[in-house]
Image (cartoon, rainbow, N blue to C red):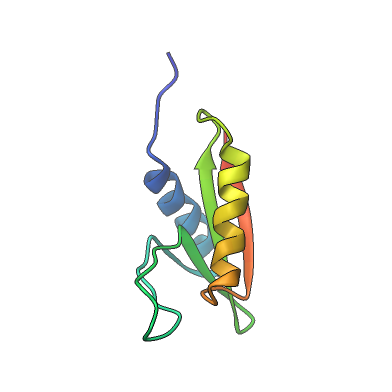
Length: 91
């Protein structure tokens, strides 16, 4: 049986790998787009040339993981939390 990892752990490892390459990133951070919005917790936030890039990840062992990751990424841009969003499906 393969080792199972929680999605949050994979998000933190991804953020650490990005930081090792000089990219400023923060995993599982609580943010608000404005005062009227509820708090949100994007998987990984990356500051890239003045833009906020959000990475939303899902694990491929769940049904519709790709659709869920894409939907979450799309919503982050729609809500104004990110300028750019990327959907990632962890194997």
